[in-house]
Length: 223
Image 1 (cartoon, rainbow, N blue to C red):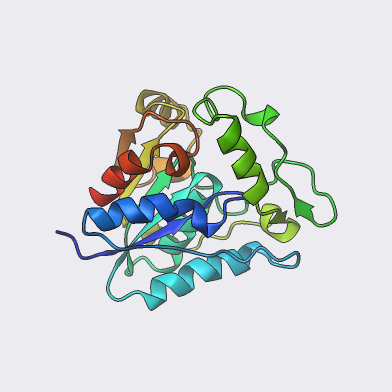
Image 2 (cartoon, rainbow, N blue to C red):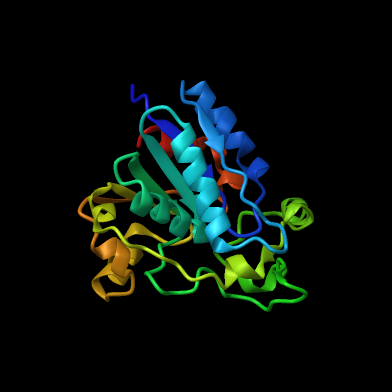
């Protein structure tokens, strides 16, 4: 059994506790996983969130598997960029790493210095199909607004050794075949340069840590 540490990094609006069922499921498989608490104060920046992930990597004994959900695939990739000798593998769930010089997640309106959860209309369809009304209400109630300095922060990647770090893309609301098409079309340039890329499927919407924690834990444990 691998003894590498597992760090779990949530995407936009997700508090660290969103991983609690996955952590429990991984414990049942003999693996210890630690959710990273990202700074989400109004004045926090993308650099602050990257540094929080790096602090978790540095605090863990040995090498680390960094799992990033959605936009946080970029945070996981930034960890591989900054710590290519400490990050054993990166897993991305339903998201892709941004390129150097691109904004992190400037997707929705900024009001009073934050990008609040925009409601469910932008996510109707495959993204949220497996979230019932109760789950949607719980998600919205727990959603943490994203600071403007995070959403509009500029991604910085400097070390090409990140491409040596193995990557697994876990495909929830899209299929591995669709991801391969996007790669072939040049739409995922960072992943296209990864030397070791695996694509695996999970039958879920965009938030499998909430709707398919056992299945997601199985995939993460197999990394």
